[in-house]
Image (tube, rainbow, N blue to C red; front, side, top):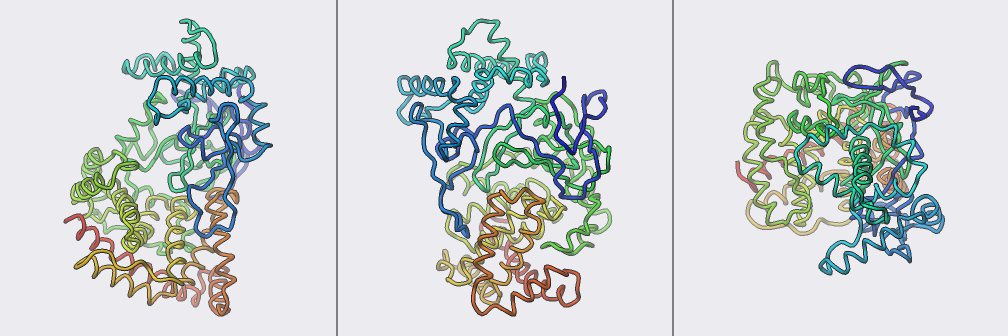
Length: 557
């Protein structure tokens, strides 16, 4: 029997190659909440985050105080028995104890800690890998058998993949059986390996690197929604609940589709990422190898951007002159080939490694730069990597200029819906930096010569900006779209709300507050458009204009 679907969606027809489908039971506007999914089979934080995340509600204790947030840091305490799972409250600890921790998971974690202490170096992790912990939770909760039985895992196809994949699956099965104290017989290993396959195919990664949140979520009902690289919906997570949002308008009876992967990656990467699901995507993006600009042009609600940081609708509809190379198949093939040499993540690498790799990637993107294809990977990603690199070096001005560039020249084409989470994240990053520097000077100029000249020029732009008014306006936009992008429980929404309260309470800003409120209520008014263009957009564009010069000066042409 199929899993029970929540209100808002229903089981649709079965189609060859795609299996079951989920359809909308009524019409939905862009950004609307379609349905919420509760009662997951598994919902756990990433094991590397166990000391910072509540193992039940999954809320994360910030690694450092969040700028603009007045909330007190969340206290996380370890289970006194296993010292591995952590909880934010007695209520969460009791709920998790009744759910799985007290039914065998705690004992498995104690065994894992004891094994690691006896056999591994002192600084080695002493926790179960995330996937093994997920298996343990399924094994100690017999009531999950029915939900797991409804999942498709394609174990026969997993066996047919390279031998290392199947070996890893069996290793996870053996590990979970060992730690829950069950016999490691061939029969048990095969049974649990089948569960591993089902979790691989049906689990969602709850990852937000910007907010340092990560975890694993499995829900049999949610997993019935099919994939597309041009989805009409997307999923966010609030604790143990998954929220399904409309990416565009959806008609009653229309199939709901989400992306299982990062759908803006080049086609070759998307196809590789989808191999674990054992189907070939035939969506328009894959069939015709469309790039970000072509997908943007097809988005049916570009007019929503009149209230956004990218209100120039003509630029979104026609980003390049007719027959620009970025709209040709040979160009896409070339972009895919470049990306293949730049696809390895730089997250967690040393500053020395990044100081060598970012210049190499920047030079590799020469043809993409020539085409001004800033929303196409890997060029888009290089800007992001460089922004983080400069931020960690302490060169906030460079990082600010690059983020402004991405905000204006990449984000709107990569995610044409103005409520896209990444667009709001980049806006909030700019807002935080500007709010800090509006009342206190930037750190002194970094370096000398060309670097000092750039930082001095950026300082001149900042001195001429009404920084608090820019922050105020962008915070209004962020909060307007926050629920459409995620929910009011989203930590970014809460931080933005706190920061807006601070800004609106500043004395002597009565006139500016009236102007911002007027723009928020009527962004298409003649006076309101002029205010936004001259006070907000043009200063951000001036900051963004430094980006290419900075990249060429630092990393070569």
